[in-house]
Length: 443
Image (tube, rainbow, N blue to C red; front, side, top):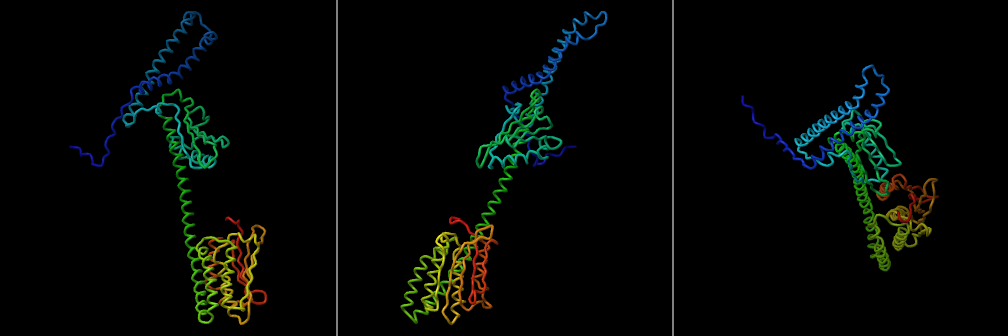
């Protein structure tokens, strides 16, 4: 019966690799010397102890001649055993070379070396890198990859940045991997990895050190890359949140600009019909106000002093329209003027005081804006108050879009550390109290 042809998706055979003849000769000689060195040490010890054994062993009658020949016979046995070991080492080495060739791999200096080194650049500081290496190298996954029956035998010294792992203890007797983390200060560091043979130096090297070094190195690189990717993802997520927060703050802040401008232009339109000189004065104040206020309204942060100056300009404009019905006072200590303050919030509170407090009253009124520093025992707080003696709270007071805008912006900027409280004033009017966490002038 004719066998079916190979399917078209079968992988092509790997071409057999050719080894460098100089490396092959060197590898065969090295294997013979390493393999026989251990047996030579053992036999040398046996020969050294042989005279003592001959001297202490009791001799039977007629065995004197035989005992004199025993050292020569032992020497012959030693030579025969060494020759047999040489042949056996050559067979093992050539078998390894044939296996490499069939796998398509050429013999390299590292494949025949008993000690192999690797270097890894880590993007973390030495302390974080050492913790990550300890976490990665002590697990079952690495022991399985190295061919162990369980997690590797493990030793680490955090003071020297040194980690040693192997199949079993004592680690220095068998083949083991030593990892050293450089202690140079900085945002990154270097990992030096070396596979040491221990007593396996006397064995024929068949790429065990290279395999162990490559396996541990790949395991460390993957673990460090996963951690770095996780940190990058978290950093990108924070950046996206910051960008989204900035967009929301800009949208909320932009709602204040037309609200104030429309009211001011409506007042200007009224004054043009009734008092042209007052309209001219208001227009002059409005132009000066816009020259100072518009760049600030587009910024993310302002200062308390700048917001107080803008409020003063605004109230000067409004006093032209209301005349003697509006009086105001701005009280702020000079050392507080440089503190950061959210833009356009204070104007909204003052505008509410004018519109809902004084304009509805049939008598003159006073608006007082003040700022003071306080402490709640744990944090320093900045409290800014807008107090009017107008008609007081009504059913709609405290429910407007402007106050909701301020409350949402405070939550986005400061979380639960900031607050806005609108309450009845002393006797009459309304008191709006804005509380913010106090930070430095360059925050």
